[in-house]
Amino acid sequence: MLIKKSLTPEGVYILNFTAEKEGENKIWLDSLIKTFSLTFPNHYIIYLDGASQLKNIMLVGINSEKKIDEKNLEKEIVNLDKESNGKLKLGFEYQPLYSENSAIFSDDFSPVERLTAPIISNYINTYASWFYSLR
Image 1: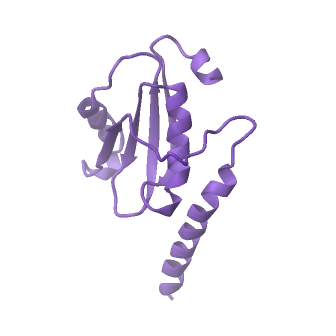
Image 2: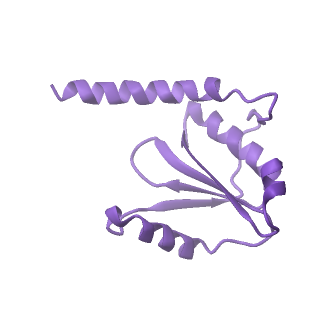
Image 3: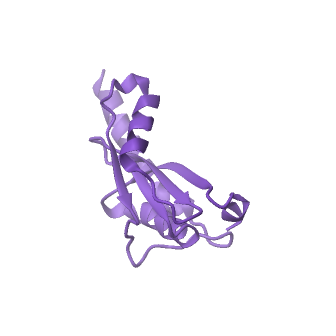
C-alpha cells in the first residue's frame, strides 16, 4: 500500500522476479499475483517466453484505469535487449487468475523463503547436473 501511495496518479510500479509459471511450485507466483492485485487492480503479468520452467516475470501495476498497449511495450522491451537480435518473445496476461490457496503477503506474513525454497532447489539440482555432465 505504501508503494501505491507514493506513486503519481498515473504512476506505474514494476516488480521483476523469477518464478515457475506452472507446476507444483506455482504457489509463489500465485501468491505474488494475489497480493499485487489487491494493491493494483489494474495490473499485467509479463513473462519472458522460453523453454525453461523458471521464468523471468514482471508484474506491472498501474495507478489508474489506463490500459497498456502490449504490442508497443513488447517492441520497446525487445529494442532494449540488443543481444536478442529481435528473437526475444514476451507473453502477456491481463488480470491473471491465481489459485484459491494462494497466500496474501503482508508485513506480518511473508513466507517468501518457504515458497521459493523448492524453486531454488530445483534450479540448483538442474544446474549441478548440467555442470557435472560437462566433465
